[in-house]
Image (tube, rainbow, N blue to C red):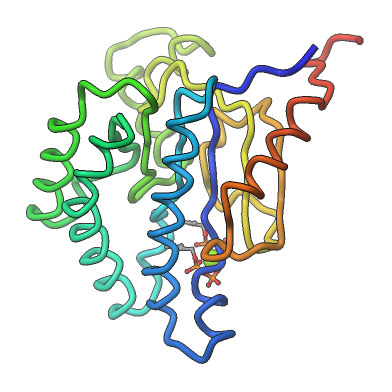
Length: 227
Ligand code: IPE
Ligand code: IPE
Ligand code: MG
């Protein structure tokens, strides 16, 4: 029996190293990486079973980067989203986010809200960008909301209170050879299958993703039971 694959999550890592290897400044890698995000979204939109693809784009820890890089990423995101609207329409992709968007500039928040509104009716795939996202932050805020309502905290009630309820992840891929979660979706990844590839994100292709998915489909997922 093949595994189901409805929710794929990707930690897009290695942009800086990709640029450095080519003698460019790090931000060149982010530009190239954004093109790859588009290609992978198209692959997911055309895939028969993938309903949701979540990309880690900016973590709550990424504010520690040099100011020029953070500014560049904010500008890139704003321009990329506006430019991407046609592609969302073309792929039938709905845009959503997870993370604390209120930490961004009003202009970027407006762009995010605009692209969400414009793509809300699409059904081929939902692309979720994790933006100013940290799993500990997400879990702590959800727990605090429940506590304020004086509700019992159970797995179900906390899971439903997260910003990504109902979205257990089947397969998580991280590029660039790093083998860690870096505070990504701790709750939703509890029983996911992991795949780590040495490929740097700007070099990642739909063909490589297809190979990874093929392997995933034949893994044995036991969820604590016996086979
Ligand atoms: C991932 O690439 C993109 C973001 C975190 C925004 P990096 O910028 O982390 O690239 P490396 O890991 O330094 O190569
Ligand atoms: C994780 O990558 C965050 C994103 C891909 C957005 P990082 O490059 O920031 O993570 P660390 O520093 O290697 O853990
Ligand atoms: Mg990195």
